Image (cartoon, rainbow, N blue to C red; front, side, top):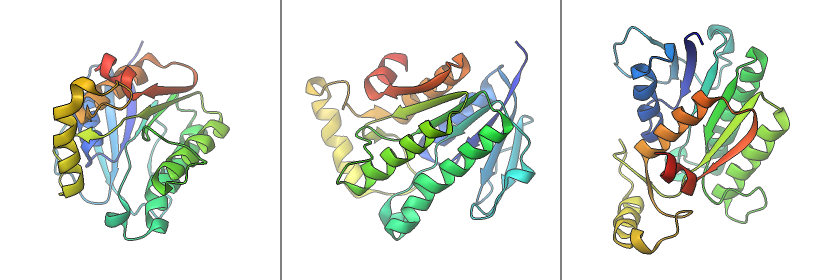
Length: 215
């Protein structure tokens, strides 16, 4: 099997930055493209960074890749509105998935969330669920949906609510079922890269519990 190329979306984020480092270190990949708003200031022979406006179609500047890792995500507070949140967490990922279909990419891997449900009364869970449903309908060669619970790791932005929740999660992890146990961003990233490189066909959901076992 020859070396492959990958596209990492959200490479400046908690999970995306871990995925990028794993891809750069892997012998499987000889080229990794990172569409970003601002330069990551990373120098690496495999890295092809593209500073783009995500509201403009960037596909013509990106050559077809084998694997797409989508780690895009924000919060309503950071986005400023539900409309902007939906754009980042639903519209952009779906647009790149459409591009992946056009390129005939072998795998499209994406992070959503535990509790994703298109019929949920919780806006966050509903948007994630709608994205999953729309991705399923695209019929890609391989779609891998990763559904982590509360994420642990060092974010660039301070989220006090998450800091408190993470502290509680660590104290109660022994009594929390694997499906809901807090999970480290490194564990999610390791699971994403491992499962993506296995290239399982069809539409597959990788649960929080499964990621704990893989990572």
